[in-house]
Image 1 (cartoon, rainbow, N blue to C red):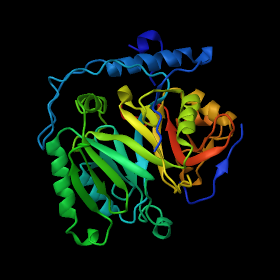
Image 2 (cartoon, one colour):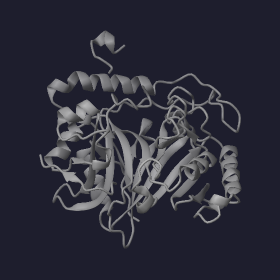
Image 3 (cartoon, helix red, strand yellow):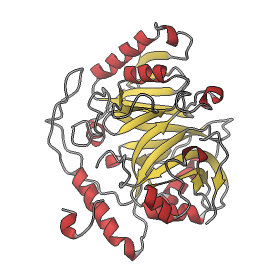
Image 4 (cartoon, rainbow, N blue to C red):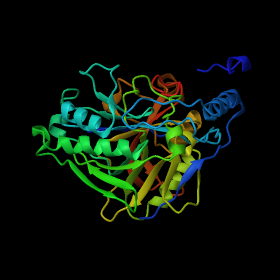
Length: 377
């Protein structure tokens, strides 16, 4: 119906370029004011969000413990014209593409077969989220720099306890293989009180495995209505929560940054972080840890935002727009025109919005829904 309205639907280890121009707080989307010339764009985004949130037909996607959603209650419609629409992928360097492939497949992901094996491995984690794992085969400097670790815990959800148990069995089998014997791979016990299980990956990344709620499964595309082409072979619902370890005294101020700069609003759940994604079913939580420096390790997180132009301008006004020399072949946005051209820009400093003090670093690859990789197109 958008054309009827006349609206087109359309960490780096290298030096950086900066441009001028356990306490927890949740954040959810709220629309900041926007200039009149962007009204049609906002209307299109709101209508699109409403269309995506409408009840969808149910389907059953194969065996291996995949649950049928025919009788599921539809998620209440949510229109997002601000905030984070999707935490889409994590980019974490690895020492071996083969080790990463086997680990993420055991976890329940599937390789994005649209990409040749010679390129960076993209592993579909459910219908909408991914892990990107460059290796020395893709970028020579990684051989000396080594693998990267997410500074916290990565939560992966499954449609049923059966699917989660099958993932655990696959991970246990990996431990006996030669190229995993000297790795950091560990599989913890099932924690009944928390209804979760913790895994340490071969390169030290920490994962929390749990069973998704119906709302989460629907929001992350388990009904088949929202899915990235090629994700059908994935045996998990998706990446739903990221916990980021940050310096003591920064969590609440970080939440304020996301509120004022990314156009989100604070919730009062008592947890510390940002609510994001479809139906606000994803989370980025800030966990204060003694000894944390907040320095980035070269890893990055890719997100899609609704108020793309507004977010860019607010970051530019604070001198926070940043170009990563490692990825200039993908984007090198320094102006709004360039950001719109690439459908992407980057920043990595999270600051106190009152004083400008840097709280911590985390590279954000920020995209709009016109980006070619938007999985809900």
